[in-house]
Image (cartoon, rainbow, N blue to C red):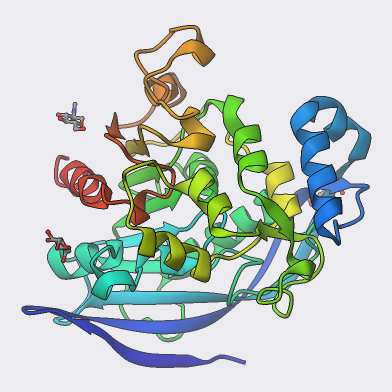
Length: 373
Ligand SMILES: *[C@@H]1O[C@H](CO)[C@@H](O)[C@H](O)[C@H]1NC(C)=O
Ligand SMILES: *[C@@H]1O[C@H](CO)[C@@H](O)[C@H](O)[C@H]1NC(C)=O
Ligand SMILES: *[C@@H]1O[C@H](CO)[C@@H](O)[C@H](O)[C@H]1NC(C)=O
């Protein structure tokens, strides 16, 4: 049941990191939301569903809502642990990817790992990293795409993995840490947001990337992504059950994740090639509590031209009636207990921050933040 492979990853001129792929068994439970919705099986079903959702999300939601439902299960989680070649890093960063990708988002091999966040975090900054495929995605167990693979159960997986890491009880990771930093992207930031609320003392710091709490722009993302049914997708159909959806071509990925002028066309092709689908249950349950009890240092980093979370400009405050100088700052009142709160809007950056030319600015700002407290 348990497999691990030791692999020596990328050797740079001066340092090498040691990375290990893991399959981690977990037992979890959560209160999901039950929906009366057949999993969309065809491209036409998917488009119908997204149109219904986009046109009137409140009534659509009401029409399919059944109510809260407790779910539990035994699952296997695909993950990668990395540390500097000389030993465990100064803290463990727990990296949670967003919709559309898997844990490789944090360690992109494109252009000789030039875009890799893990390469910088481990080789240059001396951290250990733990990246995981969210429950339901890629090397992790799949499940019912409507009523099982949802935010609450995925959040329970993040919580369980964090506890196992703190206890030093994951087979294959001998290092034990007492200092943690939770980092998310997009849907992974929403999971991270809820984790640090429920566990306010766990992490010294948290970084929410590709994120805001202004929900006005989700429909652009849903309609812009050119989503189709995974069962109509030659590559993904073998790996995922009915009810998962994915962009049908690179244009959908471009619209949802890339800002004009901020990307190498070869990176867009790569992003499409490594892309993973989303369970429809994830889109139906995404959300982050308004008030957050987190006590550590909190940082939000989002591209100025992020489509789903800023509508293409984080400085356009129309959606919040100008109540804050920008859309990221609007989260500040939600962190009354945080040791510090700061934000960075990456100039020219899109939603898929790690994939843009601007990734260097993104990472610089994250490491500046981490060295500032
Ligand atoms: C779910 O489980 C919790 C705790 O065991 C319980 O309090 C709650 O009533 C259950 N909810 C449902 C919908 O069954
Ligand atoms: C990536 O490549 C760019 C341009 O060639 C270079 O300026 C940058 O330092 C490289 N970054 C890394 C982390 O290797
Ligand atoms: C917030 O981050 C910016 C960089 O985006 C930095 O210039 C500034 O000093 C930080 N503010 C605080 C209070 O740490």
